[in-house]
Every structure is written in C-alpha cells, then in structure tokens.
Image (cartoon, rainbow, N blue to C red; front, top):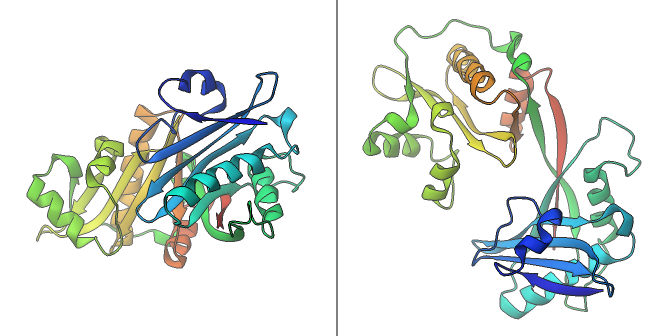
Length: 287
C-alpha cells in the first residue's frame, strides 16, 4: 500500500473519499492510501488542537476493508506525530445502538476497529488506543419539542428576547463572561464564524443578566449543532427553544439538530426536554 500527503495540489483527486470539513490547513495533516494499481483506497485526517491531535476523519472504501489499510493510515499519522510533537491522539465517533451490532453501521465499524487496536503498538512507538464511552448525542426533530412535560411552566413577564449578535460587543463579552464557566472555546473568531446569528438567542432579565441562552452552529452538511444550552428558568427555556426550533423549520427544513450532552446534568436536562429524540452513543479512542 502507498501513502501520500494530501494538500492544496492534490486534494481534488481525493474529494470522493474526503468530506467537506478536512480542508488543507497549517495545523492539519491529511493522508491518502492507494494501491499499486493507483486505485484510491482510503483517507485519514488529523488536526492539532492546543496540546492534542484530533483524528477527525478515517475512511476506507467498504470493498477494501479488513486489509490493514485503516491501520496503515494510522501508522503513517503516528510517524508524523512522533517526528513533530508527542501529544495525545484522540478520535470521537458515534455509534447507533438502536439496531443489532452487526458491523453494518459506520459507527459500529469504527467501534470494532478501534477496539481491535487496544493492544496494538504502532511501529514500536508506544502508540496504543484505549476506547471508552464519552457521552450521549441527541438528534432532535421539531416534533421532539411538542411535548415536554418535565419543564412546563410560566415564563417571566419581564424577560426580554434578544439576538446575541445584535448586541454591542461589550454586551456580547459580558454575556459570554457570565456563562464562561460552562461554555469555552479556543478561538472566538472561529466560533463566531460557525454560529448562525438568527439561531443564537438569549432572554435577559430586567438587569440584563441571562435567563436562558441558546447557541446553534453549523456542523457540516445539513447538520446543525445546539452547541450551548443554559437556563435558570425552565419556562423561559422552553419558550426560547420553541421559538428557535420554529425558525429552524423555516430556514433549515432538512437540517438535523444535534446536542452533545457532555455532563450528567446536561444529559438529564436533555432527556427531560427532548424525551422522544433519537440518540447516539459517542465513544472516544485515545492513544
């Protein structure tokens, strides 16, 4: 098997095996695998985030799986990591547990693949993977908000609805500071670029303090991500959620809205307000 670095000069040749997200960038390394006949077989991509590498893409053509191509791609990435900086390598992937675990779903394939690598050390460099459950992802449809008995309640008469990005820079900073212990990001400009202004809304009390906050971002393709959900009043949260989801139906009718419940509190909240939403189990592999 042959491996090649994917960059601006050859990325078009691998377009069918790469999603839109892993574009060439200074903090990203993408590799392609092809056989001796020149047939494309698979791709992998990682990026350096702070002090860790994130494997955000790994794909092998179904007809070429179980030939060691995925393992070979990871080995080549580990060689790059070993020659640059020995930071941890992580990979998050979703597993649909609704059906039989017969390996037919992409997430189940990845889960089985990383499980098979738990005891393998790549090229004697000490890289081996530990696989563990990380959190639950909720896939939310507008109908999932039609009945939320756990948080029924009256709203606050004095609460005012605002679009976050219509506020002055100072107000934006103050709001982010007020929720900063729950919501953090590495690059604020990159975060703003991913946000959808019409779907980033807050409700403020009479003192200008946030009562509830919803941030929704683009997540690639037709997906949207409910990246932050905060409330200190259940009735206001339900009111704002219904407003936002109605706008999603109008502006993004084919979108899937996802919410990653990364803490026990957020998962309990999500199960109360999205009782009928489909879920995925998110696993993390770390080397």
